[in-house]
Length: 337
Image 1: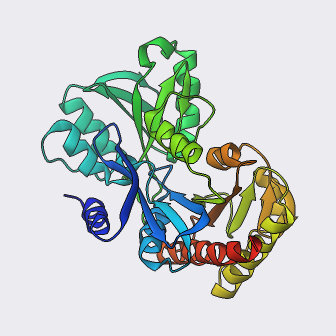
Image 2: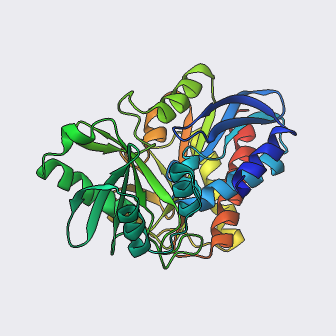
């Protein structure tokens, strides 16, 4: 059993389970119920991408740290298969112990097990084995590789061949602490030529996304906080779909102040503009299309995406997301008065 699954089993003994399902490889997507009984409840989620690990670690810690009167639901990882180490996942699929430490190792392994290579360019390959797609780039990170792969699938007329296939894209981030050359996977779902991530709420196709959507629809939530990491900023920032209300601003100003006091710089106005956000202040912007869950929840509850910079040490990223989320939980009580 992996360290993550051991942690989940330990938490199951201490906290109520509000909802649970298994992802495509049998790993639990679980929502823990913490806090008190006050309503409306809050939902904290993380790990929509397996290559954004700090949010998952922060969510696991928050499950133990939350001490408020309000009901708080915590979903530590929306893509637990992607969050696991690549070697662990490949071993589980193959039914034997394997180890991969580089993209070259991955390609050699796939060749050795007789995988069918559907696509191979100078920098990118895609192979299928046991019904699962595995892709990697020698120079791009997982999200960049996904964008290129989608274009190649469309141009090489592989849309029908791959329709309904899950593809694991190697999370190549050698300069990022907690990631590395060959560590975690970004899981995507091929549908009509598009590669859907677990943060795409635009269609009802991916069971793991439907689980989160159904939970949000079922619960009368007051606030949703989605934890992310960003390679496009050297500072922390909050994004929303639309301009915040006065109640949301009460929460966000406290969050930004606490993050600043912790010692994490805030994303500059110029950085937020380059990301495509409408700038409200340092560390705060709005605009649709940056977080699928936040877009989906907007209008039903307060909805924020907290993003910490990938170029910072892992422990700093975890602490920043924890500080920001705990601040939001405390401020929500004030905003609801």
